[in-house]
Amino acid sequence: MRNIVEILLSSDKCEKIYGNWTCSSCSHSWQKRYNKKELEEWLRKPSNDDVEDFFTKDCRKCGNEKMLDIFCLHMLRPGARKKTLKIEIIFRLEWNKYYRVFGSWQCQNCNREWASAHTYISLQKFIEGSKLEEEDYYVQKCKTKKCRNEGIITQYKPLNKSLGGFVEKKPHIAKLCAKCMGGNLCVL
Image (cartoon, rainbow, N blue to C red; front, side):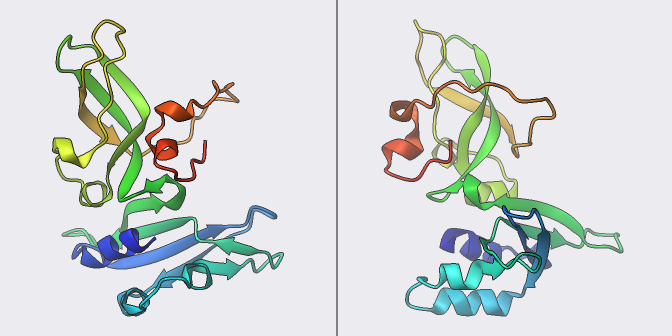
């Protein structure tokens, strides 16, 4: 959470920051606007143990506590009269200063291409929308059994929910997951 707030505050393009919540019990949704001053004050505290207090709100409909789901950044584009949504940061997709996106990959050796919804890029680069260098993302290996060389990311975009119905998932393989191997909570 601290990484996200620091990056949000360093962005000069951001005009408004909103927190969005959706209650898992009753599906009620609500929003709160955060100003830069209150986020800066929270960062100055010696310990951010109060993350839950600061970013947890009671549902106005059923009263259950709910942790913040999404930060929305709005900005005024040149020539526009209305502020538009710039980016959404979904907390369950952030990990260790990286952010999960949908990526297109290409092998540097055999030129095989593949797509992956398990692509992690630098959170800073995701917010800025700038070009990625190799140190800005977790590298994936080529999917060809004979090759297995490192791939490069050719493009990325935010993850979107599938429009299709239920798709049966394959079991999660923890030994192949950087998040699991690092000892972090994996949401899969």
